[in-house]
Amino acid sequence: MFTLAGQFPPPMQKYYHRFLQSAVAIPILATQLVLSPVSGANAGFPTAAAISPDQNRPLSSEVADNKQLDPDEKALVATEAKKIDAYFGQYDLPMEGEGYKLAEAAVVNGLPPASLAAIAFNESTADKFGCSYKDGSSKNNPFGYGSCKISFDSMDEAIDTVAETLAGKIDATARFYQGKTFEQKLRIYNGYGANAHYVPNVKYVMAQIDQMDIADDSGSTTTSVATAQTLQF
Image (cartoon, rainbow, N blue to C red; front, side, top):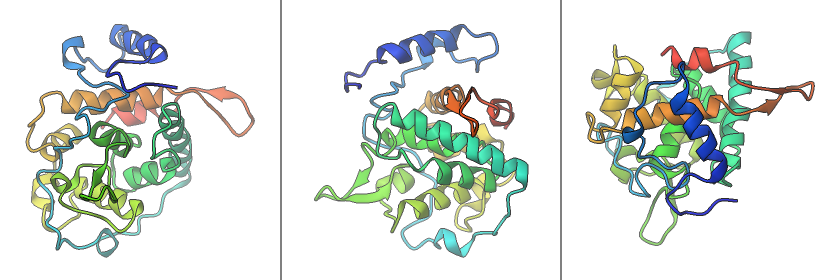
């Protein structure tokens, strides 16, 4: 169990240092890694999605392209979903159990499989500090979408809308995201780089998710088969 001390818990300290020392890891300087896996990048105050539709935006269901996943993509989603849930589960975070939806929406929209999970983790510690009304009730918005001014009817709607926003499928914001690389999309989502650490932090969590050990269908433990596909975006 962890505490909200703003520090890496002992197991994560090991992974953190191993990550920084790895020659094949994403090159992130130690001074840039202000994210704690416990408290989140923004300590409960999401600032991303400054470029987002207003409350009158079309729902994600109105712009879905009904893409069908091929067998390889389905296998990728299934594997990544387990890793996301395992990553969230080790901290007992509210979005544990959303792994499949997060991975599926990412892959359907041409994003790295762990990207939406990593954004949610950075924005709200996977909804532990998600956007809420004055009475404390949830807006189903763990992504800081619309600077927390936007609420969703369900978590699924939030996940689909953020994925489709980043994919450039929402008419109101398509011009900002279409034709951009994944890193460029993250910077735009963060208000054109309002937080200099945002992109490294998201990519760091993506890498940590992909390093999670999970059991395959035979019961054997396996490490990521999705890392290479995740980091090529």
